[in-house]
Length: 451
Image (cartoon, rainbow, N blue to C red; front, side):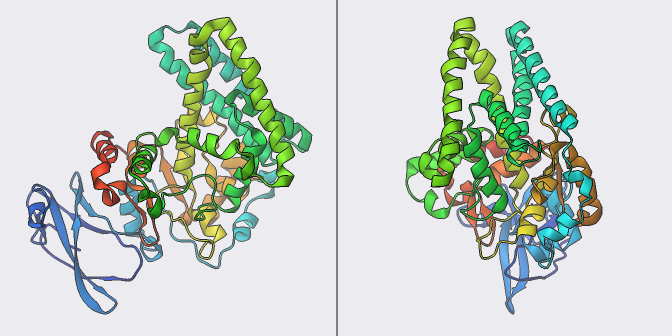
């Protein structure tokens, strides 16, 4: 490890991921040198020279330095041996915007082991609590519509933010129904789930089928239906597709759930024959809502009213849908693995992030971001997630990833977590396609780095 005093300690590396750090001050260390010393690189930025032993051979590596205050970080890939080092995990947490990055869960721990440690009461359905969540969503949404109708133009963004967050609560209610954690009556769950999704023009059954697969294959390469990293072969296909992916995984990533909604839920070819009858009922319900609800809104308030009362809250909903989903399972240290390497307990416990949001968001969205217990067992109702998480923290706390929603966390995901790499997990676009990665470079420049 190179320091400002010039002390260098050789590091023993394996084929796994490591992160090296150096503490900088106004005077560079003897192992730091200007970027102009590297052929073709512009002047003004420092690199660090790292000496290490790899497979019995002495090696050194030149790595760019990232500076934040007095801390400079040279970032290398990250895997289990690094995650076993508490000091390294603390430094990674600081760098990525996390409160805690968990240690690697031992291979011999099963998902059943984790599930069996939970108290039985967290699985219990409480009808009063379930319908109270419906009441919260309906009243908060109605309040939002009222605010939109009464707000002057300059307060409309606040009214849209409230209403879009409230309607996200509808999605969470339907989400509980899909997981059979809303009611003991399956018909009630089907009806409530379908109705809850209608204002979002989201087909309930198609989403349910695909979401079940997300839980069964969380962060499994190719198989997970929520998010996938970009594959190297995709980035090489065409310039147009490459630019679209750079924008999609960069500046517009907080709205990429719109593309996911369109691609995954309306194509009948994506469903098994035995799923098609229920899929068609959901699609018919959505199209009926659009055919009846949209004209009524336009008849009552015009195209501008449709934009104000439906479209903008829907855009806010998709902001939360995209943001919640990517924060739940995306970070430089969380890998996608092939089916041969995939471990259910590690994927669900190590591969899921607990993220705290402002309390009003947590209330309107029914604690969906207390997400770790939900991936241990989707049958835990949303109103029991906090009690389940308290139990998980007591028994498995050292393996948990925790964050509070912040700029650095979002910046890390949007500027680093792009192209799949087996060893590094993610390679940013500006490494693989630097000439076309201006949107990523722009985000790095303008997004705040506050944590």
